Image (tube, rainbow, N blue to C red; front, side):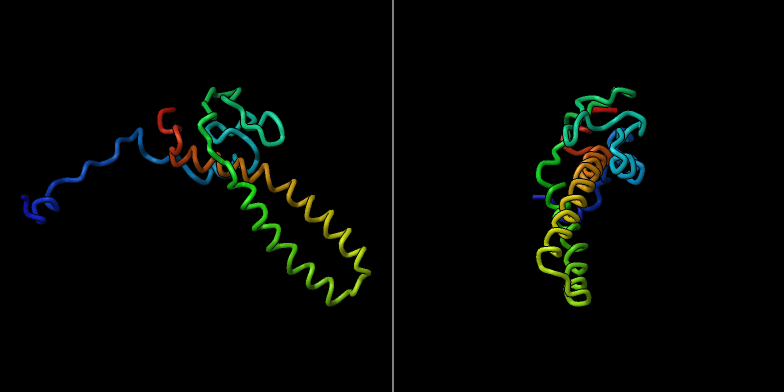
Amino acid sequence: MTHPAAALAQPIAAPSPAAADRPLRPALRNGWRRRCPCCGAGPLMRSYLQVRDTCSVCQTELHHHRADDGPAYLTVLIVAHIMGPILLWAFMALRPDPLTLAAVFSVGTVALSLFLLPRLKGMIVGLQWAKRMHGFAQTA
């Protein structure tokens, strides 16, 4: 049995440069713009929510992403926190007809959700690329 102090005295291996994190902010910004997190020039999506397998400009493999339900959860969280207080204010201050209120806020909620969903998915893919998660570690 080794002494606990001996385990602390051993040097800790520094991470190799290949395993270091990539720049996070540009990757998130490129993801928001629905661009490749690596080069920022190639399109990230081939349809509304379908991520390309590889970037058409820099050939970075993008099929490793695992966005799953994250973008939908974040979209619901953000839209609810934006539309909820506005709905309460509109109901209390303006007192519109309930059908008008429901129609306006239904359209607004759907529009905001459709706007945010692909951008948040791009940001999650960018985060995974920058942090070398889910197979992105093997790529350059």
